[in-house]
Length: 380
Image 1: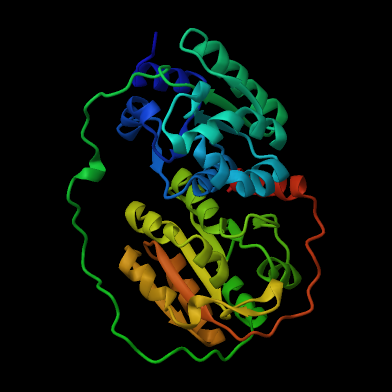
Image 2 (image 1 turned 180 degrees about the vertical axis):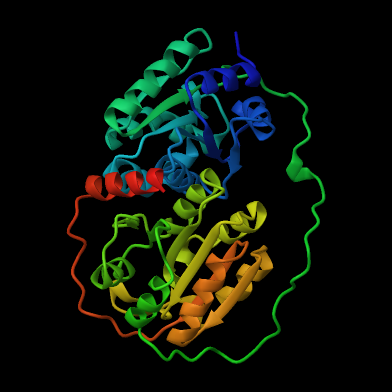
């Protein structure tokens, strides 16, 4: 016996799941097809499974109850995001994990992951059950209660045959899209930094009021904190590369409120697919500001690829409404003011020197960072 995607989606909605993101799998294609056109349970097609975990985190901060859909191979991709984001901060999310390689019956590439998937979840401390069509409602009720009580991700492993397969459907993504112009900027000389990241951060912070601000991990967090702490600041301690995904999830879940991301060149390059994700969704309320010093500062100033690649041009090509590159404090402040006052998504590339300020580590526990940030978002 199997359940239809419509029935599954109905039960998700009944248990107040109101945001979903994921990477497709044929074992739940009927569910994904339903979610893609669902009027009340929005689905965001993610470029990677760990990005979906970041999107869900942002949505939870905005008061949503999120789900992430992935194949069990995606557990490998998501391990760091689960360990140093969802589990460390305590961010509830329902993980619907399809079980390829179930009972050793699948293509060769799925056999090992199929064998270890339950143990992998146990090793990570993620509570989980194996879903069946007969117990679907009870299993969902258990999972949602567990994730809310534990403030942790909870997983349901979905074996083959639980969800109907093979329903023909037309996805919106299959249709040709039109977009107003923009084009890729012409090649120009390399940007020459004039100010330190600390000075640039200070200039970017000046126009902000109560907008929630997601910080990439590393010195961006620490230097920003040294300039002035605020409850609206989410400081990432781990999960390098996912600040932009959290910010996008927050923006999509609160479309009428601004969301700001302070990113780094190394962080963005680690999750470059997020540019296409933002360009496809085009959230008008997102401001994505990247402080580019051309190196991985926390690990010894090894060079990043931003020496050869202009990140602002990639943002324009991906579909951001605006993308600007700035090198002076006044330009940074003006660019942030303009972005906050107009429809986005906006990309601000701030070229800065390698200079690093003496800045303290973030003194708050992950749970404290989580609680005060979410409270400020929901009050905003």
